[in-house]
Length: 189
Image 1: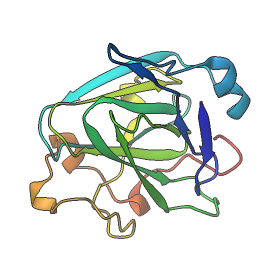
Image 2: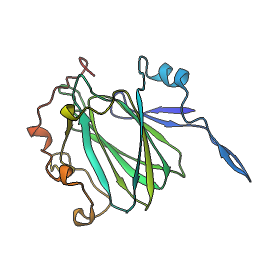
Image 3: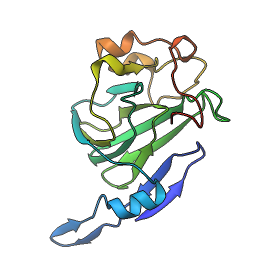
Image 4: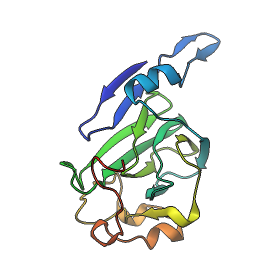
């Protein structure tokens, strides 16, 4: 398993080894010991799996507030996405900055998204399956998000906004400057 630190403090790109032959492949996609050496103290409580049938399905930018803030280890088992994470920790040297990482069945990469980051992905291939390991279960009263097209974030999406497919909920999200932000760099995340 190869682990690489990314430019936003606390974020990691993880590439598990994949062993293949004419029959197919085998991969250990998660090993608690190795992961906890890189990210101490994390316990995953739930696994989630989503399917997006069309190209251009955008889910996010989502996060959960304390005490149900979530860290996420995300990957793609079929298809391809552009995954975006935004640092929303007040006082962070990278507050409001984002990174974009392509995750796909082909590249087999995983992204560690700590609590204190907003997360989104947009599908680049049809029938994309996205898997997440999360550190807290879904808590509807702590569910929050940021508009995907917040001009201050300046995220470059891989297609025109008119072609992006959103849920009704995601069309109503506020810009970063208008959220009730409980995350403080170095304190609760």
